[in-house]
Amino acid sequence: MDPHLLRTFVAVIDHRSFSAAAQALGYTQSAVSQHIAALEADLGTRLVERRPVGPTESGGRLMEHARPLLLRLDAARADIVGLHGIRPGRLAVACAPGTVTPAFAGALARVRRAEPGLSTTVQVLGRDAVLRAVMTGEADLGLVDGIAAPSDPLPLPDTGPMTTLALAEGPLAVLLPLGHPLAGRRALRLPDLADAHWLDAPDTAVPLSQLRAAAQTDGFRRGASYAGTDLAGLGTLVASGHGLAVLASATAAALPDTIAVPVSAPRLVHRTEALHPRRTTTATRSLLAALGG
Amino acid sequence: MDPHLLRTFVAVIDHRSFSAAAQALGYTQSAVSQHIAALEADLGTRLVERRPVGPTESGGRLMEHARPLLLRLDAARADIVGLHGIRPGRLAVACAPGTVTPAFAGALARVRRAEPGLSTTVQVLGRDAVLRAVMTGEADLGLVDGIAAPSDPLPLPDTGPMTTLALAEGPLAVLLPLGHPLAGRRALRLPDLADAHWLDAPDTAVPLSQLRAAAQTDGFRRGASYAGTDLAGLGTLVASGHGLAVLASATAAALPDTIAVPVSAPRLVHRTEALHPRRTTTATRSLLAALGG
DNA sequence: TGAAGTTACGCGCGCCGTAATAATG
DNA sequence: CATTATTACGGCGCGCGTAACTTCA
Image 1: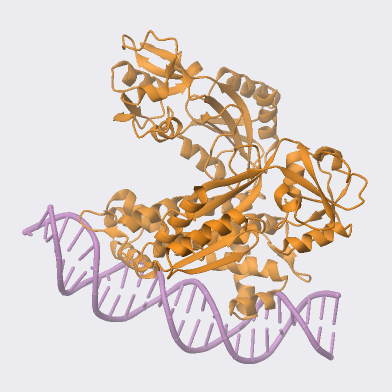
Image 2: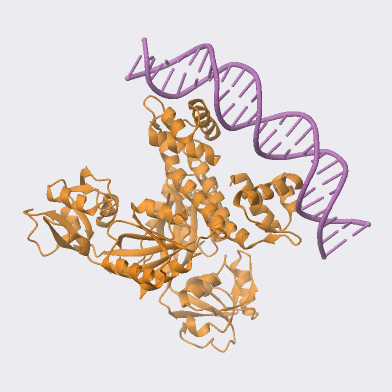
C-alpha cells in the first residue's frame, strides 16, 4: 500500500489505460503494470479489469479510499512545508461557482485597498478542487457552498486540521425553464419532483446525490451531466430543458430565461463557508475579517 | 512522506526515544535515526527535538496528520482484504465504556440464541481504539458514545466509508462526590462549573476538550487524568475529590458514593452509536437488527 | 495484425544493519 | 562515563527501464 502504487492505481482507473497512466506519471507501461501487480499481490485481489481497463469491485472500493488518502498525504506535506515557506505578498482565493458574490468582491476590494502591494488571485474551481487547493496550500482561502440544515455546518469531507467560517445562508430554489408546467408555483417540495429529469452538475448546482439524500428517495432521474464551473452555462442548459437544478435562490434568480422557485421542503438552506489552513497570512486574516464584518 | 517514515516518526514521538521506537518497530536505532533524518530532509524542517526527544512545532503539526493518515491506510487495507476473507462464524464487538447496556446485552443474547455456533467477543476499549478496531476490521461492530446536540450525529473523526446507527440518546449529568457543595442542586449549567477541577478521563467520561468546546470557555481546570476504561475507577476518583466528570445520566447514577446532577445547559445529550464497516456478516446484521428493534 | 498489457532480466539506487564516532546528562 | 543519537560504509533487495513475449479487439 505504498502511496506510489496507490497513485498509479488511481491514474490507471482515471485514464482507463495502463499506457496513458504511465505517460501521465512519467513511468513506463511496464512499471505501471508492475505497480498494479504489486498492489494486487499485496491485497490478494484483482483490482483492475483489463481490456477494457476498469476497476473490479474491490478496485472500486479501493478508489474510495485512495483519492482521499493521497489528498490528505499531500495536505500534510503542504501544511508542514507551509509553516516555513510563507510568501506574505500573495493572496490566492479558490472559489466554488456562485460564491463570488458582491459581498465577497467588496471585501476583497477593501483588502486590496488596504494592502496595495498584494498580488491577488481569484480562481473558480469545482468544489473538490477548491478543497484540494486549500489543503495543498495552492490557495490561501477557499469558498465553498452546499446545502445543510439551517445553521448547521456544511457536510464537508474530512479536511484534516482546517478552519471553517460560515459566511452566508439563504434559501434554495429549483431552477426551471420558462414555461415549465411548475414555473408558476410559489414554492416546491423536492420529494414531489423526484420524477422530473435533473441535470447532474455537481460543481455548479447541488449534486444529485445530495438531493437524493435530502429527499430520501432514489428518484431524481439524471438528464444531462454538466461538468463546467460556469453558472451561465448551467442556466442555458436548464432553459433548454435538459433538466432541472437546485441552487441558491440568489444565484438562480440572476440566470436568464429561467424561473427560480423556492424550495419549501425539506427545510434546507444554501450555505457558504470560508475554508482556510490554520496557519494564515496577514492578507488572509484581513480578508476573513472583511468577510466576517 | 513514505508511510514507513511516518510510522517511525509517530513511534519516536510516542516513546520519546529513538532506541525505544527502534525496538518497538523491530529496527535498529540507526535505521530510526535515518528515517527521521529522511523525513526532516524531505520536509525541510526539523521535526524532532533530541535529548530530550520530543516534537518540534512542525513535528507536533505533523503528528496531527500522521496518526489519522496511518489509520486510514490500515483501514483501506482492511476494507479491501475484508471483502474476501470473511469469517462468518465470528462476531467481535468493540465497546466504549458505558455502552455495554442491558439493552445491548439483551440484543446480543438474542443473537447468540438464534445462532448457536457463533463465537462472540465483547471488548471494552477507549473511544479511539474502538474506532480503530472497526476501521481495521478487528471488530465487526463498534459502540461509541459522546455528546452531541439532540438528534445530531456524533462528531466522529473521519471514518472513511463506514456506517453509523443511532442507538440511544439520554441526558447528561455531572458526577460529584457525596457532600460536594453543589451536590444538592436539581440541575447544573456547565459554564457555571468552569472554575471547578475536572478529571481528564477521555475514555470513560466526556473529554475535557469537548466540554470546553461545548461551554465555549477555556476553563475546566484539569485535576487528575484517568486513562483507564473502567467506569468504577472513575467513580472512585470522583468520590475521592480528584475532580468532576460529565457522563451519561444513566451511567452516572449507578456509581456509588457519588451524586449525578443533570446538566441543564448547554442543551446537549449523551448519544450512543453503532459503527460498522459497510460490508457486514450475517451475525453483525442480526445484532444490528436486534439493537435497532 | 497491431495496440496494449505481461514477463524476463539486469542495472542502480536506496534501505537497513554493523560498527565506529560524537554528543549530552 | 554511560546512554543515546549520528555518521560511515557495505551488502542486499527491489523498483525501474529495456526488450521480448503474449493476448485480445
